[in-house]
Every structure is written in structure tokens, then in C-alpha cells.
Amino acid sequence: MNWLIATRAVSHAIVAAVITFNQVHNGELGLTSLALFGILYFSASLGTYLLDRRKKLTSTSLGLPLIAPILVSTLAVIAGTTNLSQLVAFRWLTGLLMLGFVITELMVAKKVGRKTLEGREAVITAVASAIMLGIALGIDVGEVPLIGFFGAYNAILAVHLGISAATPKK
Image 1: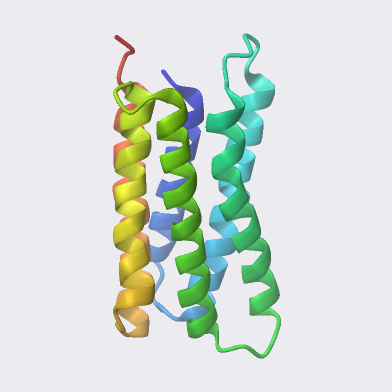
Image 2: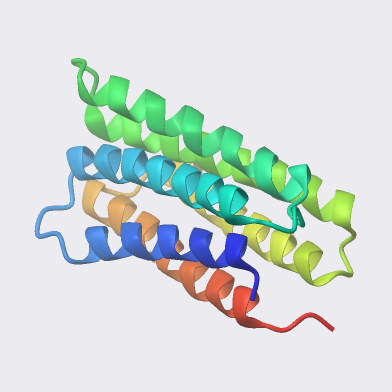
């Protein structure tokens, strides 16, 4: 079992559940879910790193994908406390997060090799993130669908990463 991918899958699953079971899908929920995701993603990665006694984790798979969630969650907290339009802030911060995921996951895939299990997982994550990037910045959907698409994105990645984490290495 790949514990780093498993804990990141749990981060996606928690955010998807928060969005799914919340009655109101507005900009405030969007910014809160971005902040929650950044905190959970960082905690999952840090916890897995600290518990890794064999030091098997590479800096590429551990450090690079953390940059965008930490930056976006910090900006989401700032945007939530200012007079910015929460929907506009959510839209742009989601686009920034997805762009960060596309870039870092493609870098991870290039570093570990696209034919490896970790490389294929990174490419699939990059493609899903690129689709969400197009939805967030390219299509003018309403507030409720945009938050819903972000929840669906997290649910899809939770399942994908969960399966990837449980798949035995060949």
C-alpha cells in the first residue's frame, strides 16, 4: 500500500464529502473547501513523511505537489476575510490550484517515468486537473455548478488515488 497516495485520497474524499453534504453551495463554501483541502493535503503529506521509517518517499512525489495547495489555501483564507467577491476568488483560486496540479503532476510523471505506476497515476491526475481548470476558468457556469464540479473533481480523484494506493507494485 502506498500510504502517501492513500492519505492524499482521504484528503480529496473529505473535501468531496463536505461539499456534497452541505446544503448551500456558495463562494464561502468554495473558499472554505479550498482552505480545508490545503490543510488536509499538507497534513497527509507531512504525516506520511514523518511516519516513513524506511525513507522511501522521494522529494519529487512529496514536495512538488504541495506547492499549489499550500499557496491556494493561504490565499483562500485571505480572500475569505476581505471584501473580494467570494465566487470570483474561488474561481481564480481553483484555476490556480488546478494549473499547479497540472504542472507538478506532469513534472512528477516525467521524473519517475510515464510508464511506471506512479507516473501513470500522475498523468491521470494531471488530465483530471486540466479538465477542472477548463471548467473553472474557461466556462462561465454558475455558482452552484462550479462548487459542485469541484466536489465531483475531488470525489473522482479520491476514488482514483484510493485505487492507485491499493494497487500492488509489479
